[in-house]
Image (cartoon, rainbow, N blue to C red; front, side, top):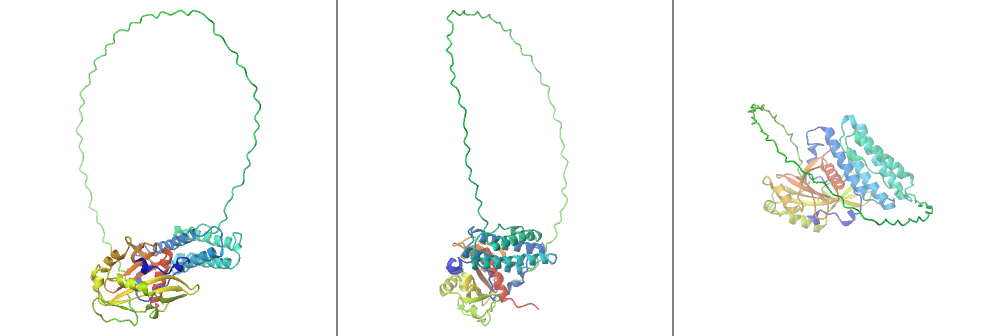
Length: 402
């Protein structure tokens, strides 16, 4: 699936901002946590995911600031700040959460100013940015996100001082002459050793008494009955894909009809949606016949590239398929197992449950949907861009709450 998920090569060289997700699905009702541990746990886990992805993006930057590296760092931190601002923090930590996101946005702005000038490790923006990152380390601990301790950006290399070895003058040792000793010549008598007689030793007979091992009675152990309470798993509603204006009546069995999603969905935020190139659409269409159930199905398919309008850089891709009639239970899971180049695993991205895997070219792919309605395939260059893409996609397709 590498050819249909990858954005164009220029996307690899950019630090990606949070992506908006197309308005095909009503999947947004999943909430921030599905582990039953409460809102605080879900918020901290998502903030940890954002910080881990940001740390990974910043760790590959060179130690000396330049226009390109400062621009890349600004984009990565701005993306993380936008993603953090969209999370729903616990009510008693709303101030810390807002400050955390604001610090990232301020750091991104300073790095943009740094890139516009003549970047150097001594630039005042570098020290201010690192101060904001250090403040977020403490805020992250207060918010329960222990992965938000980031190393300083563009820290100057430490040069060890040169050491000149000391010259040590050793004292002169006088020559010492050892006199030659001549042993005396003489006759040495042979001593006579007396004969020593050892008397025989008789070992006494030792009688070992019989040892009686008493019987040991092990009492019966009664294990009390343990009652395991019933666990109620709340229903998670995954909104279904609906293509506005698309063909909704069943078509010929096995027929897949193309719909230009870029004309059907209005993006939110600083993003634009462009139709995916024909080669990627053809590859996706071929993949929709990977299993018998999908090959026999009919429906509407399409795809969009997500473009950051502030930089005019493509940052992600979303492909979608809406079935005319429901598929048999387990059909989507079988299709994912067939097309994924590496074993998929259960994952929650931007609050949406699904299956995630890494393709042969090291891109992250995420599939979410149901057997009875539709599914989407989202692609990002790493975990940070994938999460931002899914969040922005569902933000664009979810109606405003009243």
